Amino acid sequence: MGDERVSAPIHAELRYWVELSRLLGDRRFRAPERADGRRPVLLIPGFMAGDASLAVLAGWLRRRGHRVVTSGIRMNVDCAGSALERLDDAVSDFDEPVVVIGQSRGGTLARALAARRPEAVAAVVTLGSPVLDPLAVSPAVLRTVRLVAALGDLGVPRVFSTACRDGDCCTEFHELLRAPHAPGVPALAVYSRSDAVVDWRACLDPHAECVEVGGSHSGMAVNAAVYQELERLLDRSEEPAWSR
Image (cartoon, rainbow, N blue to C red):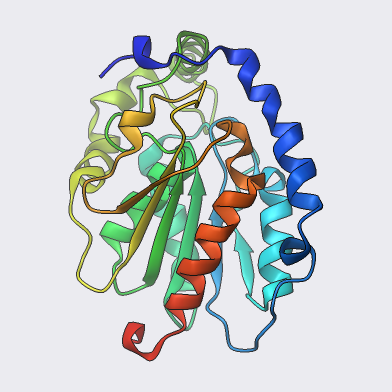
């Protein structure tokens, strides 16, 4: 699996604004059905992004009645092993299993977290996340990854380094990405064949329900089709059969 499979041109990511405008015009987004007692949700942003990048999604979830907790990530460039430890602490603060939703690199962290803490995770959603190969990205993004790693090599704090790829710090993270989910932890993997950042094939988690949508990589969190899939998963998560 390699970056040559990312066939969409990078300017295709400008579709984000079209996707956002369509979402904002959707009545079901603006006024979703609200209910008390919905499951809490933890949101994890993508590579080089922070919690603010998921503000639109967080607002919709709150309008539905979910308690939303963000990851505390300002820029997702930390060592995956270290980030996973902090997210583990975050889910421990909930008094019930939480739905974890991650975009791009955030989805790989969400997927690892669900495999690590199945008793604390009610469901996991990955949005355009290369869970099969975190480096299956476009050449431009891969260059950025290498630049960030070089900063980590120089000792910049809370930045991953080249050693993270094969080092002990991330061994567990990589093992968890390949591990099956525990029974009772539903998983949804959303991908787009026209993703201009990530090789869509790397998003096909064999242990998840894989759903294709049309759209950009960066627009996964503002894509109306994604919200329909999230609504379906979240509504199912309220069913008694999902209780632990």
